[in-house]
Length: 217
Image (tube, rainbow, N blue to C red; front, side):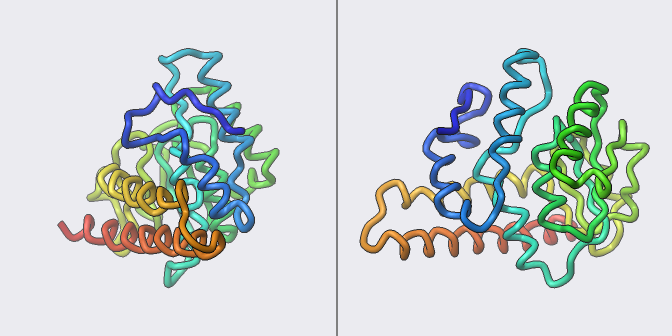
């Protein structure tokens, strides 16, 4: 069973019951890379609470594969700000196998660990780690995911899908709400899973709309 230090997250970020429900709903179709997820926790246990390598909340693990199914055109260049040791980066790279992924990580040890994880996942040839925002090709990116340093939105290209903290928070709440009915499913179990997956897909579609709306405000 996957376990996690819940005190590393506030209450709206993590619920102990989420992990098995994410696995039940999506694990047959998507490699959620729980091995990498747990490696991040092991890394934090070793380095202490000052460590800035946080894994994504488990409710977000299927997002990238679900979003890839829904986007009208696949991004060719993606930027993630905040690599940690690479859990989200691997999920993004696998969801968009034709994209070039850039990810920003200032900590040299985290960069070395992430590079090993990318090699082990077979994605190292498509992922480039850069040490700062100044080294990131923001102007060329079709998708920008803020998971660390903020981005100067004036540098974003027209049409870029911009997922910032506000969009992430809204999606996290919607994803948790989508999966929560599986805690006490009623009726046919497979039908309950289908409904949960559809609610999650609807949340991902709303994330895309919200991300594009953020660019227009």
